[in-house]
View 1 (cartoon, rainbow, N blue to C red):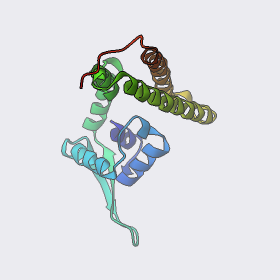
View 2: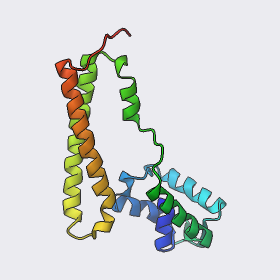
View 3: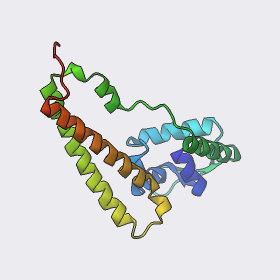
Length: 180
């Protein structure tokens, strides 16, 4: 979806796609840390007929550069994916709830320390995100910040939960017999 969205804006080459994702901080919501993953996704989009090669060129002493553009099928697919992703909650399997499901694997004190460490990390992420929202909000329209607003809300909710969990673990309100 991320790559289709970029190609929908204008014809673009793979390296520029990755640059735009990072410049726009979309790598906070889309996993494209490896350049290879962008190229693999482009191959799938090409194979599925969602994008096509517009042109291939080479500048002096630079690698060949292929520019891609959206097909009509790609545009329709992108629109349908967006409608579905916005309207239908997906079953997702994040790691933290899975770890909570098996909390008794650790002794209560060790679990409390790990949860408190998570709380500190979450607070740092929230502070950084709030700074970014305040900074970019001065020159970007809100529509370009809605995913950051969502992340901020989710982070605040997780911080509230984790703070309470850490307190319950430290006070002994939540405990178990450790036998591993």
